[in-house]
Amino acid sequence: MIKVVIVDDEHWNRDIVRMFGAWEQFGMEIVGEADDGLDAVQVIEQMSPQIVITDMRMPGVDGIALLQILNERFPEIKIIVVSGYDDFNYTKHAIRYKAEDYLLKPVDPKELNAALQKCKDELAQVDDERRLVPMDLELSQKLSSLKQLLRYTFNDLNEEGLAGVFEQLNRELGRNQAAKPKLLERVIQEMLLFMKELAIDHSIEIVSEAVPIAQAAIVTSADAVAFLSQSYLQAMEQLIQQRKNKNRLNLEEVRKYMERNFAEPISLEQLAKAFFVSKEYLSKMFKQEYGRNVTDYILHIRMDKARDWLTEDHFSIKMVAEMVGYEDVSYFYRVFRKHFGIAPGEMRRRGQV
Image (tube, rainbow, N blue to C red; front, side):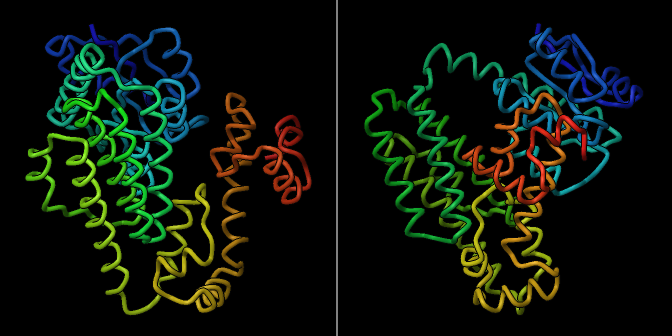
């Protein structure tokens, strides 16, 4: 049986999901429930479910934090998000952490069961792939590294940099002797999902005419890389045209971009290039509108997020540092102490939040 855990702070919402799901038909059973993210982690550790159905807005450890934990500690678990809010930020996090579906309350039984069917199919596919085409650990690590490069080059609208990333991918797949059609399909799906995540970060809807035709014709690793490169270039061109078609600088759009990508290395130069204005003009207008320059605003977002996440004991200080964009923990300590006048560990101990 496929094991399922339901997470929602309102018991009647859990009751609805329990009542509407066609559990027996899908060979599933509900093995546990929780009313916040922290309890959910404990249930998941005890029951080892394959599927987690979670709300987003909950007291304590909310859905966003739970998605982060699942992504870090239980990446094989399939996630269905059920939320009462059609919120862009929630949707973005659901996609970033690879949720299978995002359903709005009140739950539609057909949508819930379609999502459960999708999870069942995905789990079956993973089982098949594990038996037939195991993903090489080195290749998986390389894909993670290339995704970070793709994020930076895409955010910078850097076509040359984008081409360089796919040259690296081509070399990596060329060296991998297991680059058979099934494995190439996995790589393509993973990279297209990441492209959708980038599109949501930039509020664009990807329209790729090449996808249905080219994907069917992929035989070699070179075919796969050419298809992915073309798809990313088309998405980047859509973003460029969207920005060029705007008559004036939209500071609220800039601010939202910063709010969505605060954990990434954002600079004034990169923002100016991404929004087709001079860095001098952007700096002047942003400070005039928000009372802080770009660098200070990003720092303020990061520190506020870090302070909030420090209230949760299960997040190590190292994890909090990484979640707000600092790989160097000692540097995070210095920045945090300078901003708040107190070290992260001391703030956690004193409960000063």
